[in-house]
Length: 138
Image 1 (cartoon, one colour):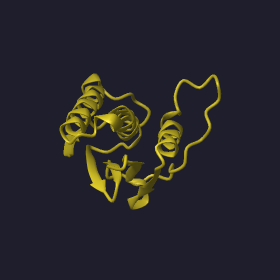
Image 2 (spheres, helix red, strand yellow; image 1 turned 90 degrees about the vertical axis):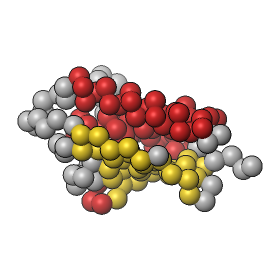
Image 3 (spheres, one colour; image 1 turned 180 degrees about the vertical axis):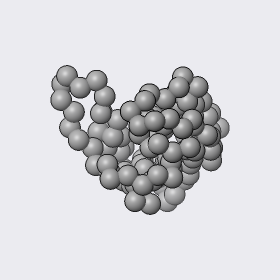
């Protein structure tokens, strides 16, 4: 699966418009459909949550105009790439404080990757965030 969509440009610190947020739901839906069609429904819940977190981060934090989501199968792993085209220096999750209302997305992705015997990281100087989940042996 490869899906690219545009997002609105906005000043730093301004929340994205609702139509950009709706694209997160669309990407979740597409990911679940594609995984189910490929017989991978058993990993869909984790993958959809990762797609949701990575796409949300790209929309909220990148300042870019376009986001690309790629799901691919590689050597027994499901790989999820989210590319926003904007390099970032924030490539490692910080532990959020209990009172924080956000900041848990990458921590959640890291946890899901570890539970799924996978890994995650960034490429392209932070313009792409990816996660791999190990698929069940057939």
